[in-house]
Image (cartoon, rainbow, N blue to C red):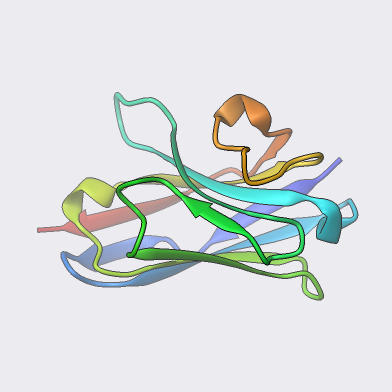
Length: 125
């Protein structure tokens, strides 16, 4: 079992920045690929980013590349998502997810085994 708790969401203006955090517990965190997804009202859950268990590899969704940065601290069992140049279309609930046997190919929600409860990000125009 892996427990995931996100934090850091909130309201920000167009062009602003936010840093999301995800605290993990209950498993050998350093061997788990971690991802971020988001879901806006009426839309499907969308892949944002994934990071390998070592932290050396990352992959991003097309609309996030160059604006968002995923990172992890295995000593603290934490994953982060730094979001810059935010746009109103980035408004969504953001979820942290864990893929026990994952890698950088883990970009579909079904690839992931555990999910956090989500944190709301709202970008005003």
